Amino acid sequence: MEKSKERRTSRSDEARARAQLLDWLPAVIVLVLLSLVVEFGLFGSDGSWDLFWSLLNLAPVLWIVRAVVRGLRRADEYQARRQLEAMAIGFGVQTTALFTIGQLQAAEVGNLRQLVQISFIGSILVWIAVLWLKTVRVR
Amino acid sequence: MKNRLRELRAARRWSQADLADRLDVSRQTVYAIENGRYDPSLPLAFKIAAVFGERIEDLFFPAEEEAEV
Image (tube, rainbow over all chains, first blue to last red; front, side, top):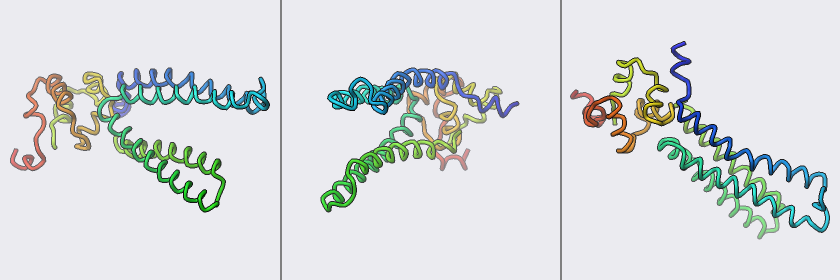
């Protein structure tokens, strides 16, 4: 009983989590809708409008950038520091991966598009993993 | 940096979450400060001091002073 009381989240944590959800939700919904449109080739997404539908993905991505920045500003000082550290490591992994991909491409090894996507997803996973590892001991 | 947060919190029978509510921070932040994993900024240190009604220098002290106290 005492343990569960001790481990409950604080009110500011709950408020932050609610705000974070509201910030991310529109972008996630739009990304899912866009994926469905492109997957099923709706509204000309597999024809003359493919460039438009591809670029439209930038809108939810920019919304996610906004959500991340807002989340960082909303975080308390300890959380913000941990998030920034994790982002720095994720950014380092991303730039190193892109540099390596560039070198591989110059040597005509590998598929650039696929490798860029893998490095992008990988760096986000590294960001999340580092954040988790840096805070797991204080949960 | 060492501190007396755990001791003062226990004296008031507050959980970490209770103290976090009073400081408007996450429970993880309180845990990290109590365990010396994180040293709070000056504004947060002042806030902690105000919550406990103590002076900052009575709450936080360098690790080497611990043996002398």
